[in-house]
Image (cartoon, rainbow, N blue to C red):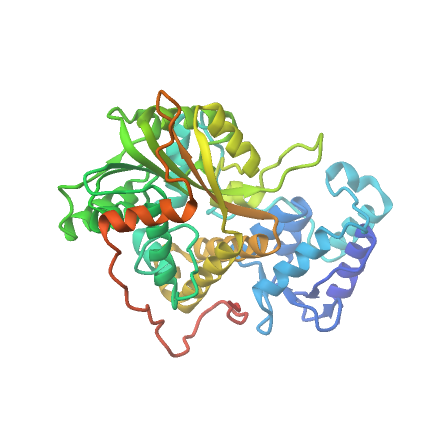
Length: 467
């Protein structure tokens, strides 16, 4: 037997200067790497070619999304991601540069020679169809933002319903001790936002990036507000309007296909922005913050729910994840929480409260991955195998990133002070969390969402991920 795996692993370890954390099974059936380690399967020579042309994260993503790289049946995706993350971030390990310019060194020449002997060197394979191609226009122009949002959110409402569950909430849930299901935790998050905003009957709420309308539905139904929700996803807007009509709330909820920069009819008593600011971009963030400030009435509150990255060492430049940028959130950017707070304050807001929910998001993402895996054939039928693989990889990788504190999620409560500097908030946190419930009445209890039982055949190959 040719023992392709041994040759390949030996060449890669020679380049990296240390053993790799995965076991590799090549297309000839040979295996190499640490015994008992998570096993990845290179199904063909094209998988290796993808890695040679795009070493690192992008090449691995292309190989997985295309199906050229698989996981062994006894391997868990989270184990692979955790092993790779620990390997890449080992502070005591050598960090060789890997790129075309570095292929001139002896270890790189050995890797290329191994690729030649294995018949894997050739033209750069075309990226999977799910990868974003050349983008037009200035980053975060309205036209380019619409295209980016469409790429991610216009995948199909039925696909999202399968992943997110009946609440159709695509942001971090709030796992209170009493939560028995994802639906419980998402309902608790919606209610937490309403309470932080101090919503009361008759108030006017703006939800920027309203998704499928879950927050405005909850606020109108349980807190008696009149709500405007805006999104630039055509599929989200269509379903949100349908849900409002079916709930008998169309007279109190206005869902618009509209950019936040185009909203003409402020002021609002409260503004929510949940999972939307990540799409704004660092260059536009102050524009975003100032626009929300303009749309709020004096004394009004803003609830900004946003993913944050860790601060970088001095002099190090922020780089977008190539996988996330090309497959998941084109042009998306993360900022440290300190930067977000500073921009809000620069726009005129007074920041009153910051709540970190990092652990909550890791658990939420594991629930979404479990939903996807449990209905894998339906997901593939709805969105295509490549797209389903993208979602599985990005959600599982994000769960690991939250759990290992590489990224976080925060709810920032800010106010637009009155002309005399008043915030309008009660003096203590328990008071302002309770005031909305007292004014509107506590929401009804929701029944636990029971996951269908029974095993189902999938074409994932590897075992279902562990929550």
